[in-house]
Image 1 (cartoon, rainbow over the protein chains, first blue to last red):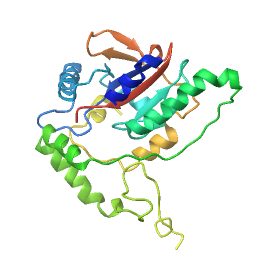
Image 2 (image 1 turned 45 degrees about the vertical axis):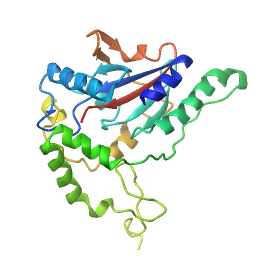
Image 3 (image 1 turned 120 degrees about the vertical axis):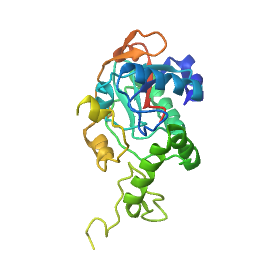
Image 4 (image 1 turned 60 degrees about the vertical axis):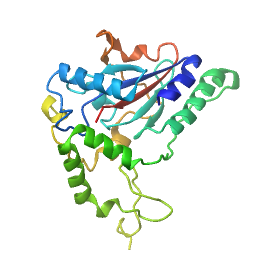
Amino acid sequence: MERLAGQFANRAVRSVFIYTREAHPGEHYRHHRSMDDKRRNARAFVEHSKVRRQVLLDDLEGTAHRAYGLLPNMTWIVGRGGLIQYKSAWTSAADVADALEGALDFQANRAKNQWALFYSERSAWSTRDQDRFHEGLVRAGPQAVADYERMLKASGASRNAPSPDIGPRVPGNFYKTEEESGKK
Amino acid sequence: MDQAQYNYSEFVASPNEFLEFAEHAPKATMRAPSFPLEDLATGETVEMKDLWKTGIAVIEFGSFT
């Protein structure tokens, strides 16, 4: 996402990162009990991940995070004037880039081409880098690793791929087989 | 949801959070809600609506963990 921000910066696209609650708190990066806790963890994140985008802190109650749906790593694209043009449960730089090109095209050519806006949904995909994700849990601390492993154990059966066509079932993939839907 | 519930100390998966997001969070074509945020670098307050005042805004939510 850092690279994408740089690629689109000269096209009047402003990229920001809103810092929320800790998704997987552990002994090294605990949950926030104060804004100073939040600032400390956010600064560690900026330094570790070499974030160059503007980082904005939500309040301690998560007011903005809750209003936008509360997911741990979602991305939104908002057009000039406040029109939501993209809403994604997870962040995939490739998918965001694709949506951004569409949003820029719409913004530049809507009036000329007399385009009319309408609502649409589609699925998206990304590679799941489990090694990198696990590194993040280890960095957070043993508790973060244990909490995640406990969740996997509890939900293991339901996370199996429903079919080769669908692939691994991750949160945000709502597909159910006919059997799961109770049709057989 | 109070402050302590929001900032949970132990991760526990919420089975319906993604469905809630799909069904109840604002949708594409709606007007984006705006809230005040704190700029980590300067400490100044930034209104979200200023992010999309002159162009397109890409907004990623997340944390270190």
